[in-house]
Amino acid sequence: MFKSLATLYLILLNLSASLANYNISNVTTSYKDEACVDGATITLTFNIYLNSCPEAEPIVFSWVEKAVYDDPRMAASLLRLHFHDCFVNGCDASVLLDDTLGLVGEKTAAPNANSLRGFEVIDAIKADLEYVCPQTVSCADILAIAARDSVVLSGGPGWEVEMGRKDSLSASKAAANNNIPGPNSDLTTLLSRFQNLGLSLQDMIALSGAHTLGKARCSTFIARLNNINNNIISNDPDINLEFVQSLQQLYSQSNVNTTLVDLDHTTPTTFDNEYYVNLVSGEGLLGSDQELLKEAARGITELYADDVDVFFEDFRRAMLKMGRIGNGGVSGEIRRNCRVVN
Image (tube, rainbow, N blue to C red; front, side, top):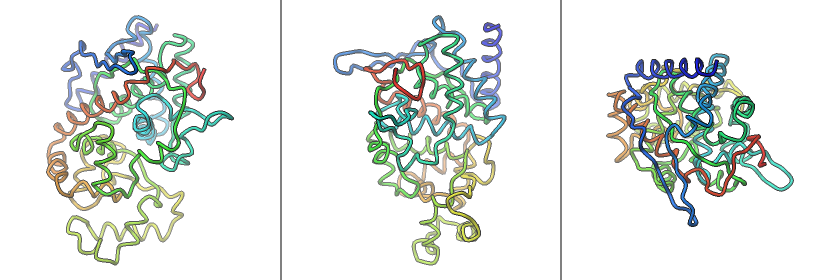
């Protein structure tokens, strides 16, 4: 049964990638990313579970597929979980840890509180994997695979995920508050947060394309609305004043903490380059989105708006690069339950 499931998974992944004009067979499977931390060497590589748990990726895919079918917004939520994990001490599943008497997790940090979703999907995946392959697949690797599958199921590019991460033994609410860029960050702040993690300007702009999926609360762009009548907004040629005014009208008629607005108002559940097309038209939702038209960022943003294939290729490469941050935690473990350390 599992052999058939694995075969079906590979067929679906290749088909989805082909529809996105990207062939995952172009990715070499011999690449290994190694790092030495405190004298210990760890390796992220492809197909690490091929023998120890060949069902791993098909199981993740099947759960993500069900979750996205039930709630299309879940694709963005699972992708965002991986982002918010990697930006805090590397991709080590620290974002999944619940608060305990001896540990303060990251779920109550400002960028995450009442915002991050998808924890129950990860719980279901982990429970299934623990039944089939006990203590084999890390929660951090589950997040990375689920993020890829969310993109593929939304029409975006496919790629082979490097695996071998360990799950952290701790979390950092302070790092979550300090490292994750806010919705009103300016270009200098955005670039600084990404460069601190070894990500380039191009990586930042490509990864920002994840905002082609998902929604945001009105409270995340209220600062832009408060400036609608001053020179910051009115005299900026890169901002569509009519679009911002429509947001102001929505805000005035809604609860800012509960009303959700599509980050990409054109194709909100499809992974494509419309996010960049919207930016070039002055219709970015968040202040941090519209910053990608400033200075050195503008040329890359306009390129992605013009060529979806270039965006897909750069996004794939940037996701692999982001997935290597911290190299998965050399001092970690394979959690039996993603919410608590063993």
